[in-house]
Length: 274
Image (tube, one colour):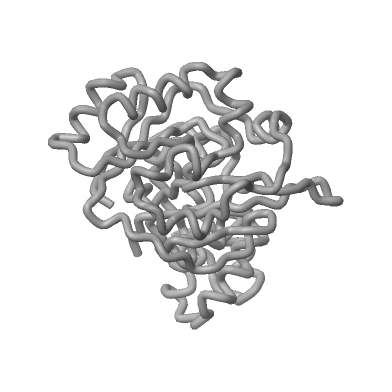
């Protein structure tokens, strides 16, 4: 079985309050995009499950990889047999794009289908939440308003048909703990779900990512990328998650992928229609 776990972007990210358990309540819209890894799951050739990772270098032992954690959790829950998993990494890590979370969620869905376990999305999402905060989103893989610590989801109405997206990932990555350390939780000035009904070119200044306030001074290159995307004609730009990837939404742009790759030659880039 071959699957293509895709990335996500965050459209708006409000840090609403700090919780007693040390986590933060957030408000964000997660939106799936086409930048994808490749995941293959086959019956085990040996006596134990294995994970082979190619593509981007992942400095993580197999058993600590979210994919293997997803397999072990699913096996514990259902009693399935062992498998060999092959993961080809394309989505940049440390980017705020949720690549690792997507890989884990797609592993759960793939195993569910492969072994005909017939778990529904709610059951899979509950399992995914034990792996990571972003993981349940990828079970549904449709635009969602995420609240709480990012694991409470509600469908959200958003129409980006006719737009294209460009994503730029600079070499530096932003540690999530560092990003959170620099934010001051506050009640959002604008309701995020309601703001999505505005025309996309009205989002700037209204739909914001609170992490940008602390990340941009520490990583000026990320701020420069956001400005450069705007200068290239993006009608809305923002950092995704806690960074360091930045995306721009374009109404129309010929040869967008080539233009972005040329303009950001030292970065990893992706562009496609939405």
